[in-house]
Length: 158
Image 1: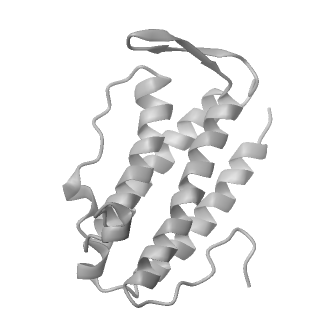
Image 2: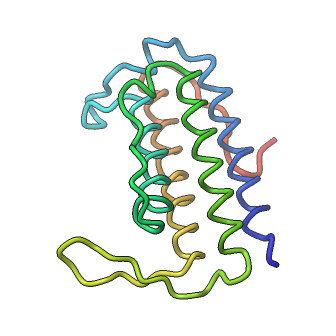
């Protein structure tokens, strides 16, 4: 049993918690404010997009479950955003438990109207966490555009 990815996800959780704690300092209306340079997305809607990406790849795509995606109501305030990520954590933990014994097994993923996509559990996990980190940087930039000074949310931080 390989627990490396479980440990790695703990680092993701720590980094995410630093971001969410920082978001506690941001006025709620700013979390919902559209940012023109980000296609009029808000910080809350971008966090919803991150959460939906976990659902999309690890549930709806891989498991072929039709779990409903998070909606606009799920990012209206920070408690709702935290709740959304609590659900994501369950999905990730289930995924990691399911594939803990063979992270390199090829998984054939059906794609509507296209040929199958073959990925490993390791590739899928890497994709969703790097996707989150990509957007975490954008969230820091968005908050800066709203007049805030972002905190360090890296895995290694002071």
